[in-house]
Length: 226
Length: 412
Image (cartoon, rainbow over all chains, first blue to last red; front, side, top):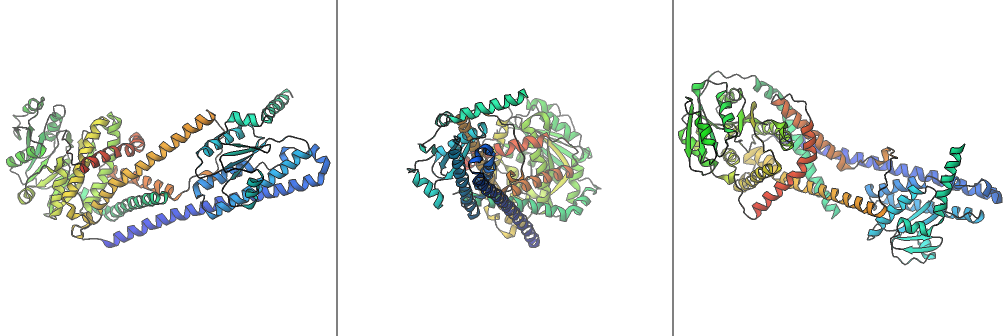
């Protein structure tokens, strides 16, 4: 005798379990998106505050300005956005929107950093990185290099942009730097470097990195002397 | 492509979960009946003949016979027929030592395969109940007392025991099989309740002699005569049940190579017998066996291969990316590990995978308890989780290859 009721009961339980798993996944993905949005809002406020602070202080700002005026949370935001892209999906509309917002925040931070650098005659340790998720095997390797450099030189500011992102500001950045479309591409001191660049290559393009390393070592040893 | 592969993965996991829940619901529903079965006692002792076919089993056959002699059952009611299927080692010498035991009969023939040895034994069996015992297995003294009460139901035509691996801690391969056999105890019991047993294992399944009179003797059956016999019974609506407290120990292959050969043979036989009895599949006349157990067993064959192959693929991918990372930036150890909920994997597949693994563990534990096994060691579970699913596709693929190209699998 077939017990059809048991077949149906089992089907119902299995469906409930699957739907619960789907719901939980959705719930945590939304929480992640909210988390990223929260960080973006906080960075946005930080940048606006820094811009106003910098304008108010004018010429005197150089005495008080150091790197701490720039938002330190950009890196952690980049990590979470990358994780979100990989796990929630890079075609998810929320993720694409967050990526656009992130790119705008990066540009604002970049412009503020350039202003500080120009006004205070302080060379900046920063670079712009263009990548693509599609058909760019070297982009994965380049991201390894840049992550390693960021760990090694915490003062280094890396502004990464998806070359294919449909955002006017990013397209303008591409146009003013006359990028050919070959990827990965690094822009350092307004000079474009196409193709894969190793750690040593980037250190060569950005000699200030060595100084930063030396000054941070000095600062540490000075501290130790106290 | 990614969408398709995710769809296939979800479908396989859904079916696995469905099967596990179906088994657990059935267990929950029948747990009272299972308990009641355990308290039944044997009042009459009908005559039983146990056939022991052997071929080059010099190391285990002595123990097998000894275990039969130690069975708690009236000696005059228990006949043992040992059939040497043309062994070319010391097997015959070992079994000859038992020639003076009154209830032991020894037969010797030219090598012709296990089913021919069993059929010769059947010709000599005179009792109403006939069992077989592989020569690499040992019976628990109470096993027959546990099995025979099930024949009080005149509809019962065959009774299967619970199988355990003998001396499971003697090798990693045996530990892995131990977990598999513990799961098998549960699955066989629930399959019996669902009237859907499709293997009457070589180690100590007992049949009514009427089965052989009605349905005929053993067949070659692609070297898996125990599956063919069960399917023959099922296709004739003969009832097969399971005595979960009747424990039989079998010597599992010790090395990977031996296990691989055994499993290629089993899987090849499974696919070939399924082909021979395909009329049962999706046929409501055969109840749960036709509508669920056989179709799901067939699907699980492909599901295991598929799910493990995509896991292999994911592991290879991560190894490649690790190598690329090391080649690109060198070895850079980092000890700043900060836990944050953001990075916990909460994908739907992870939840379902954890649940499937958890339920499998539950089935294994219930299986152990059913057979009265009180072993709290868990290293076998660890080895099984790490190794079993990764080695199983090797024999599944080989058997599939053999089936596709009609290659036969040797008995040894």
